[in-house]
Image 1 (cartoon, rainbow, N blue to C red):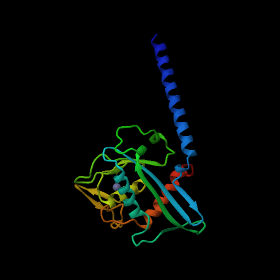
Image 2: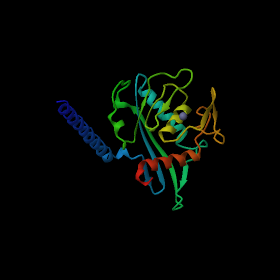
Image 3: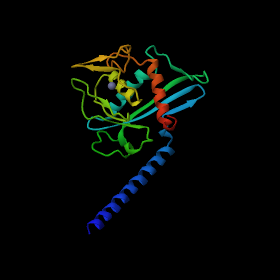
Length: 224
Ligand SMILES: [Zn+2]
């Protein structure tokens, strides 16, 4: 009797698992078929990094979305002297301009959307990013991005440079500071970089190179 019950429970469990797998497979197929899924596009002389960021939570408004988008582009679209970013393909010696196409909007076109489950988060192929904005920045800034680099919590009203720093994490870049007892210290050689100093640092060529490398790695995981 006991064994029979156990078996029946197991059948139920595997049926549920199968449904989850079918759902996942469908989501992945759907995402692959969507052109927005790609985050890198290549033209003869330009590489464009596309980022789709959706914000939700109590402070997620259209104004906040607009500020985030402007903050990110202010730091990332050109170097601090206003010049285009360039990279050279080491194999072909070909030069490319690197452009950023970043869109930040409220999830489902609804301001202050709260407590919902984002199915797209289960989809490893998805290149969309989801950020919760649940409070206004107060005191020490506590924004962060998950280790998978596509979800996070940012606050509203913080300095543009901090949002630009957090965007660096969405691109897969790591922090360039470390904690020493009760405070943070900037990594040696990174002092003027945005990923070290989220208040006064700048985006540098090495960030662009690393972001491109990371983006290509995520798009072609089988080649690693
Ligand atoms: Zn950081």
